[in-house]
Image 1 (tube, rainbow, N blue to C red):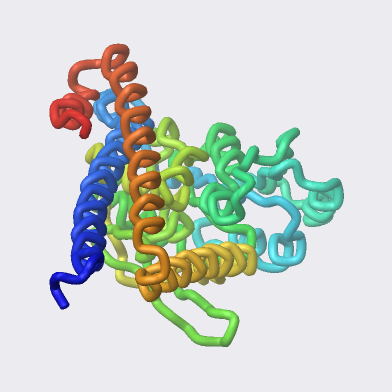
Image 2 (tube, rainbow, N blue to C red):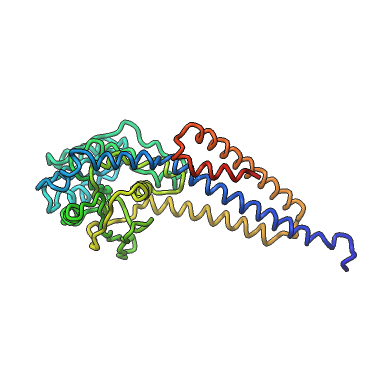
Length: 356
């Protein structure tokens, strides 16, 4: 049997697949490192660390910890969720036991009835500002969800007059002691960012409590927190969606990396409801991932159909990935030449590996 023509073809096919699989795995690792390096360039941690040091050395820094009754700015980005905005989030902000506050609602190019509804509250502590354009967000629904609300939130923080910033979603609500509890913890321990636990109410009526220290993805939300207004130079970034990060986690993670003083209160101070848009975006992404897995399973289950064609196809895919990797390396080399030596250290290490 072993002497029959073509008897070695299955073995050659399996060996080719193994070699191609290893090459693809190696390239995937290089691409992951490349993306991590790009994110570090995007976030520019050295500049943020310098500005944090300048903040701490400034004359106004201590006032947030020492003034008897500091003003707190509650910032709520919105688009067109009037029912929850007027019926839940803004009332919960105005009902805080810490009374010295302002509420800044920023529309993401909201329709006129949003401003009309807020005006009917007739509360001088509430201000509304509407952006002239929405986003702009990625056409991919999942990436758009990751970045949603970023421009409005940043605009609200820029307008804030308070010594402390308290973010809030337009469909979430603070418990009455949210600001008072977190502010007391921050001032007592001289922390620059403090968060509590979040009581998440799911559409099926379940209650799930979120919150861990140190912060990690899914266990901290920006609406769970208050932070020193001097940190306003660190904003939500639309670009974090390109790295698969929710905008609030992108901000918190950057704060962790540059050394912002953080703490947590082991108490649920905010009620959080996952939005329908978030669920739709996640479902769409999961469906696409499942379809990709089905395609791979089908291909793996049927290697005997056209082995030579399959090897050729994999080789083409590998060539495409090599071309993409080389293109990224070229762009990174341009960045390396134009940015500081300290900032681009990970790029030099990456470039030193060379390409295959």
